[in-house]
Image (cartoon, rainbow, N blue to C red):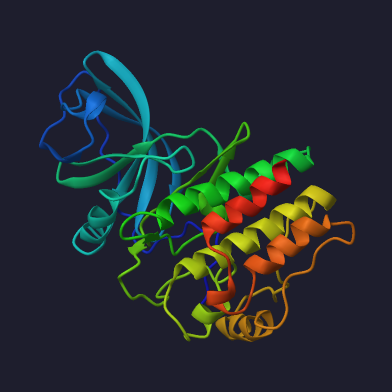
Amino acid sequence: MKKKWNSFESKNKKNELPELKSSKKISNYSPIINKGGFFDTEFEEFNKIKEISQGAYGRVFLVEVKTRNITRKIASKLVFDQKKQIYKEIRLLKKIPKHENLIEFISLISINFHIYINFEYFEGDDIWSYMKKSNNFFSKCELIEVIYQLLSGINCLHTQNPGIIHCDIHPGNILYSNRRLKICDYGSCITSNFKKKPEEANYFFIAPELVLNEQNYSFGSDIYACGLIINLLIIFHYTGIVSLPFQYPNEYPFEYFVVMANISKYKIPNFPNDTDEHLKLFCEGILKSRPNERPSAFECIQMIDKMKQ
């Protein structure tokens, strides 16, 4: 299987967000799930500003909505596979908790017979793009804080009842701006009592037991993906270089991911020579080859708290 984490290619490019005129009321409007407050009444306006991203299951737009004579910006995902994917997402969206490091779910609506999943709009880049554009490396304090925020969001998901496993932690799903980090894209999430193996995954940031089809997604596989991102952040802090955890050939055929998964069971990514020893040991612990040997997100937060002191 071949999939690049920053690819927004889709098999369905015919789905378009309807052009809506602000002077006309939206037709065929039907709220399916409302969170309440500002969004518990019908939108008077729902106007596309620009496309933010595109993935396998939908296109995400920056949308300006108006109700009660108040205008706000939201991120709205137009779902492609409305029969299969939407019911899967609905079950989890209602369970996603409110947390400062998680993109907040707002509502799910139908307009002109199209399904839209609405989220808070966070004005920032994914963390890979942020580092690529940035001329300033993270300071040591900023690095620790970014790691802390990432693990805090994951811990919030994992400690729900039942726990929520994200299953798709990679730099494209980590948003960052003004020292604030938020995890997004809950389309692959499952609850911990559900068994799931990779169908379409980001093999750059995935635990070896998943690539080798040895185990199902777990809290440990989320933690491993976080470990790879933390390794990326550490390298950026010390060198200013933004690179994948392991080196791959240009075409990234699936066979190479299998080889690297076997290697990563015995070897972890490299660290710069001057890496802080506490940070290095922390990351190495997260990247243990056996899922049950990896610390929980809560245990990771406790370790990071000690580094912050």
